[in-house]
Image 1 (cartoon, helix red, strand yellow):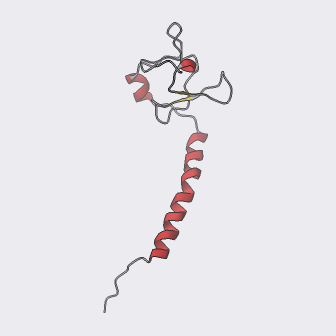
Image 2 (cartoon, rainbow, N blue to C red):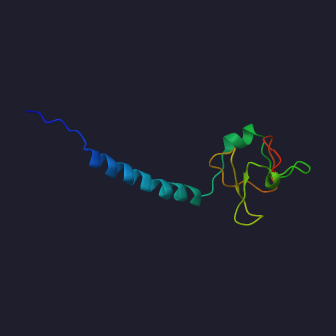
Image 3 (tube, rainbow, N blue to C red):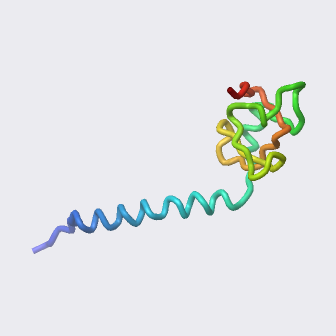
Length: 96
């Protein structure tokens, strides 16, 4: 007789728990290395200098770095960790 392999509920929970436990590790290791999203930068016409009074540090999408002058991130540019607080793109919206 051929025995079918059916994972038990306990096995499923163990595997699911291990997968959930790995999410923060993967997220932290992904942020450890600086990266740019060149395709989004081009599409949004990102530049490292402000456009008048409009700059990333005053935009609602900007995610600040450790210090006010440090590079940060942007909610619009997934995976990009090298956004200048003095930068600008066409997605700029004044922060509240």
